[in-house]
Structures are given as structure tokens and as C-alpha cells.
Image (cartoon, rainbow, N blue to C red; front, side):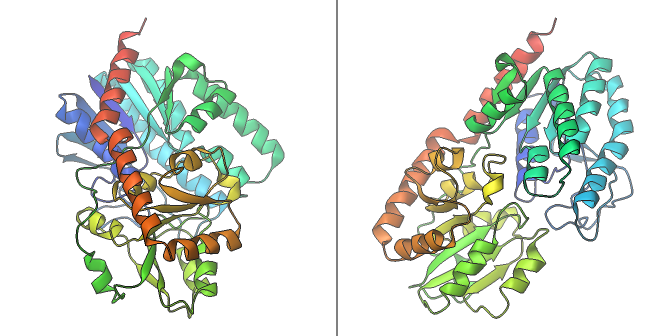
Length: 409
């Protein structure tokens, strides 16, 4: 197969959704498929272009067996609703001619990774011109999230954009997403059941696994062996609701046996640092390279996965798979019946979003119950191995790609 992937983030050397895109492309190429990727220069989650790249130049590079075409985009110094829209639109604008050029390559299937939805029309047009099949993968429902989180607010604009989104989704031959609850939402947007595909984020259980010894990060941060570490690692954006972690640290500042570690970057990073000013029970770490990821995840006695109430089931955090694979319990904020709550039924503790008191009570309870932490962590690892193994997930995805191409008429 000749597979053309259009995605904003392609960062195989780091963590997050860009890493998933990179692993997927590498895996498909290793299976003998020809894979091309059209992406932005590496910039996320730091919101600045990585050294050696430019935000205003095109670049073509080979990463392993994958042919990657980097396209310019505008990166705002500060984020707002309008600036985010312009940022995403700039990638659509600059990637459009590169995608048109790929028509001459004659791909068999074009995979568009959302966000951004702006790129969906490009994928549809190029698939029509090259007589290829079209596939949209929804990593999160950016349109719903933008309005529900207040990034955009006009009710009239919401009606228009949601209609356009539904129309675009229905034009793709296949639409995939990462959880059962999100599949249900696809149906509500008009995607036919036969065109819906479950394509979950996977866990690299061979490279993420429980360590038999203490993480080197504990010594690096000079955290006592007797302290229980609650770790948040990932993008620090607005939809995560990370203020609840800062509030927990503030109320538990006198507990010498409870320590919080925040690792990552993002749009809310500086605001969160300001909120935590003066708190000595929070340690801050920058985004870590892939070769230190397992050591980082093993730093946690408990992983933290907060989310805002209005983002429930609009996203299924990609970071959850690594948390489970590390064999540590997860404390999450989610409503009953959501996908996160179902996954963590036997491998974590779930409290309602925005409830500071219950969140803090859960931290205190987990701190005082090492046996519960061990059992939940064991369950988490078993779940990751059984249901989220990378090869199994990608093999099912490859079969779906082949079936989609063979169904062309």
C-alpha cells in the first residue's frame, strides 16, 4: 500500500500524539508499505520550533523508512481562541500545495489525523484527484472542545461549524477514533456505523514496564524514599484542569509524605507555575526525551489524570496508555460511564471533575494504603498488556486499511 498521512504533529522522538503518529508510520513502513507524511515542523507541546527546523520553510526528510514533508505554520507567542484558529488554518494553507503534489505519487489511501479539522477538505480533495480511499482519524473532538471549553463562544458559529464538521466526516470512506464513547459521538454526528472504526491509542508494553528498582528521578529530585509521589506528565493545556493538582498541593503542604511532580509544558504552564508559587511540595520537570520516559513514569507511586468537566469524553488522553503500562495506579477526574472511568474500574480511582475535596481525599487514602496501590498497579499493567499492546492494535488497523482499499468501487 501507498499510504499518505496528513497530520499536524509528527514527533517520533518525543512523547504524546506526535509519537503515536511516528510509531504508526514506522510500523506500517516496516511491514513493507510505502508511507509518506505531511506534517508541521516539530513544535508541540513547547509551542516553539525544535532546533534545526524553521516555522517558515518547507523541508523534506527521511526518518527511517518514512518520507516526511514538513510544511510552514504560524506559531503564536500567546494563545487565544482566535490565534489558535489562525494557527491551525496556517497549517492547512501551507500544507495544501504539498498535498496536491502527492497526487502524482498516486497513494492508495489518505489518512487525515484530526485535529485539525481544517485539513479534512484537503484530504478529501486529494483522495478524489488520486482516486484513493479517504480515512479521517479523530484523536479528539476539537470543535466540541473549543466551544465547551469557551475557546469559541458564538452559538450561531457553533451551529454552522458543527454542520460543516458533520458533512465533512460523512464524506470520508472511514472515520476512526480512540474510544467506544467517542465512536458513539461519531454516530451522533452522522457517520454511518459501517464507516466507524475503533482505533485506540496503544501502549508500548516492551519499552514501558514496571521497574524493580527506584526511578533515578527520585534521587535527582531529592525526594525521600518514604514519600508517596503523585505525578502528572504530559501537555499542560487548558482542557486538563490542572488547577485541581495545585489546590491539592496547597491544602496538603504540611504532609511530608505526599509529594507532587509536574512534568511537561503547554499553554497553561506559566499560569500554573504562578498559581503554585511558594509551594515546596511540587517539583517541576521539563518534557523528557523518549529514552527517559519509562524511568519518568516509574517515578510515580500514583499517576494523576485530571480533566475539566466540560471536556469529558471529548478526548481520551493518549498519556493514559503509558500510565497503565508502567504498572502504577491512576487517579483521574471523570464521570461515571465515561471511557476513562470504565478503563480505570480496576486499575485506578476516579472522582468527579472539579471536586477538589474528593480529589484530595483520594490522594490521602492512596497515600495511606500501599497494598491498594500495588494491586491497582498490577491490574493496570495486566490491562495494558492484554488490551493495549502496540502490535495487536496496529495489526487490526492495518487490516482495516486493507479492507477499506479493497472495498473501493
